[in-house]
Amino acid sequence: MQYDVRALTSEHSIVQLTVDACDESEVRRQMELRGLYAADIAPARSGLAKGLRVRSARRTRLSLTLFTQELLALLNAGLSIVECLEALLEKEGNAASSQMLSRMLDALRDGKRFSGALAEQDELFPPLYISIVRAAEDTSDLPQALSRYIAYQQRIDSVRGKLVSASIYPLILLVVGGVVSAFLIGYVVPRFAEVYQGAGRSLPWLSQVLLGWGQFVANHGKALLPIALIAAVLLFAGARRLLARGGIAYLLTRVPGIGERVRIVELSRLYLTLGMLLEGGISIVAAMDTVQGMVTADVRANLMAARQKVQSGLALSTAFDAHGLSTPISLRMLRVGERSGELGQMLTQSAAFYDGEIGRWIDRFMRMFEPLLMAAIGLIVGAIVVLLYMPIFDLAGGLT
Image (cartoon, rainbow, N blue to C red; front, side, top):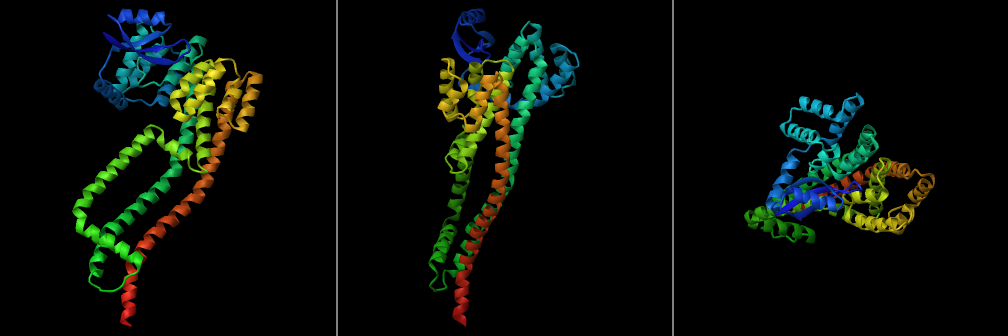
């Protein structure tokens, strides 16, 4: 029989395996022989069952930052981890969150560590979170680790919030401009085409092209509408797929002027995550393994190549420089951190430096981009209107 196993390695990272065994005790023996700790064992699921499990986890996703803040407050008040979870369970009104807390309490009462209880619900708790908790258990410094994670998440949310805020107004302009242009081309132009069809006048070439499109829409409107809807759905689905797989970030890196800024954003997040893990007591190799699922494919490939060099004894700054994971400023800061033994702190400071630089660049870029976008939309709408009215001007001129 096959079992799906989620296990913790000695380097605080999570691996998922499928094991052939006669029962769960045999699975645990196999994991122990491999030097792994089996956090969760379940009969192997079909692809459909796995998909349903993922969708169910998404529906029960908790606010990890809020959970961590509440847990930290209770720990600082002097409660044990079991008492903290019991208190959170008593005040929880959401059924799914209550079940999650109950499962964690059951695991702790069965003698499992807190990190093991979290690992059993890795669809809710990411490997990064589980790793810092497991490292904190080894050093008996869980409150400090949770504080570090909260600060880390707030920094990530701050950068994400700047990007989202900066993109709202341009998106509104694009949607409104697109709707107005679609209305003009899909409704107004066909009506004008019917009026001009029997005018018998020679029209400007651009007006002929626009009115020809209008006549085509008027004659085939019923067939074009479902095609347009299908195209919109496919475009939306494709954009979501690209976004989920990091394809949007890959495309942006190829845009002149923007690609370097996207790279800086990726490096900033990489430095911030590595810095938090190193300050939490996790080794650099284990930290690099943990963050590989949080970066794009290009950065991941370079990170794994750098990991091999670090594992062979090369300094992190040299490995990063060799694989394009540093800038002149971050390279100097990494070297200072290696000399002083404060590499984690220097990685965090490098991330803070680039967060500030990205924030300033976003402000400058949006001040320039928003007027240009408004001008472009105005030109498109204005050109459509002018091309529609040029035949009227021509007819009026012929009457005088």
